Image (cartoon, rainbow, N blue to C red; front, side, top):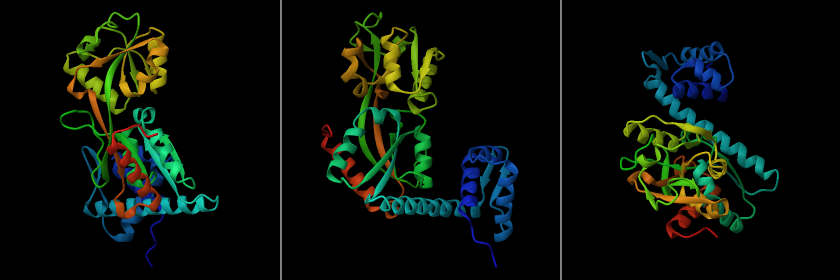
Length: 312
């Protein structure tokens, strides 16, 4: 009798497909490569078909592998949601949602939007973590998160967009990148700046490897320059403190820094670039796979964004 698929094998298969390399997939799952290869070989022997093909660019799923990948993601997502919802009932909480969001979203209106939702649904529990956009999409696709909130670059506002194919997406809010400098900075008297004007000055990088970092590096390269960050930090608060200390300027979202700029002695200068406006999206698995609480939260966030007003 054929052996049933187990969750660990399915998770390892997903990791290999996403990483395109068994060694990287094994490292991601804290296993040795031989253990990953053995499990996938056992599945191939069980079904009598190859699931992976190896090429010059790494490992990719075959047609059968693509079918298994799609079903594995659906199954693990359902299992994760089932476990989360049942565990919450044991603590008296009627419904829970796990949210992953990019650093900018967490520093802007999302916390207030969540607060207004919880004020209406006091028996719900929401967990929220900060992640890079590509990590958010991967976690949502695998079912490890119920809802992702992230910046989605477009052709008009380029970046390095994560692949949201197969996921449900909705427009959320937007923000505007600006240049933040200390009051003593040579550029502090300029009401508006072009990005090229910042390149001759020491700069602070934020969230290395994230979409905003990728965008700014690309714009720097288009100007024929190389990034010259004096310091790189993971969060907006740290960037503002370092700018206030006079160690450099930073390109940051205006909506996140403007409310605190004057108290820190910072100047917020408009960035006159088409790509300075960023639009955020909500992303989930297909609506048919969503729990009732996640649907309620998505509807609330969409309503708040459409109203175009502060959350509280």
